Amino acid sequence: AAVWHINKEDVGIMGFSAGGHLASSVSTHAEYDARPNFSILFYPVISMDEKVSHKGSCVNFLGEARKTNPQLVKEWSNDKAVRRHLTPPAIILLSSDDEVVPPVTNGVAYYSAMRNEGNECTMHIYPTCGHGWGFRDAEHGFPYHEQMLDDLTWWLRSHKSPNENAVRVACIGNSITDGFGIGMAPVNGYPAQLQKKLGNGYEVKNFGVSARTMMNKGDLPYMKELAWKDAQAFNPNIVIIKLGTNDAKTHNWAKGAEEYRQSMQAMIDTLKALPAKPKIYLCSPIPAFKDSWTISDSVIVNGEMPIIQKLAKKNKCGFIDLHTLYNYSDLMQKDGIHPTAKGAGKMAEIIYEVLATPAKTSQSKTAAKRKK
Image (cartoon, rainbow, N blue to C red; front, side, top):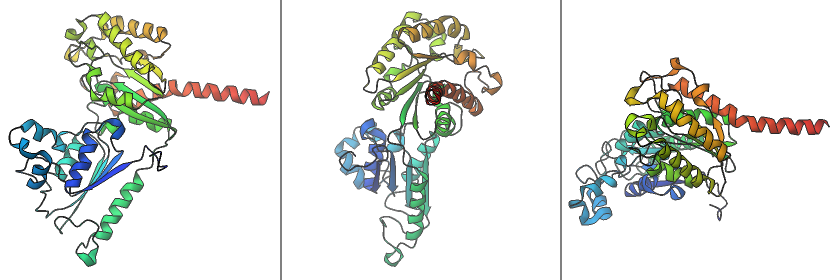
């Protein structure tokens, strides 16, 4: 991107048929730095199960191993590899009567996987013309050529190029950050709503993973997730850490407060060592209004919050007391643990006020100097 003088935050990949499998593979399997920002998939091969896909593509990609290794087939059937928040937006274009690459088990399956995860994905299905029409026009056998160009053009125009120099904000957390129970969480979760409040000068990314713990000895440690690896590769300028709700489960807190403290300190140390030297904000968990999944609000208040506050002071991190500031039982889902979309909006509002305060203070000081 630097050599070609293009926005490194706006690099996409396009593939046709078997090339669509390669493009979707890069979108779902590549490391963060090599993962595209969007993908354009024409009648793509998605599944590596030759019973429901294009056999030649399966043979060429997996070879003889496909016959004896079902896990390999599953791994590279890319509808099975879509990750919430982490797989980039896609547009899929295909024909309903494609008999070479069955649409339902390939392109449609990828769309369904993306939609089920709440990731942004658009699909256009044309009535006829089978497979391999590419950029052929009506004169050469594809009567939907102009419509296809319009569909693709409008999709690209609807995705504004990110600000390459934006302040990068990483939201690290569990299901509350992830947006559990919120429809289209990548659009309606608190990180997405925070993005809207902060505007184009910021790039907010959601690295939340449901059910994860801060504790490295918890049942599902966050720091063993791909999202943690991606959050570091993002090289954020600001990090919002909100982990602790699942640590407050009876079987996890039995590991001890010291394990929670050590794990949080390890996360802070790793983030402080990143090239961007990010400003880190530690959040107390929002209240657990019910004891669903044995999550104890008493553990959050008496066990976790003192640790979070001490670590914030020790490491010169910001502290956001969501437990006190988010007192909205009426904006919770039935489980009493997860906020609704409106509740996520309140979380975004609280965090926005904290992030915006330094900027407002700086602007006030600048204005005061000018008056002098």
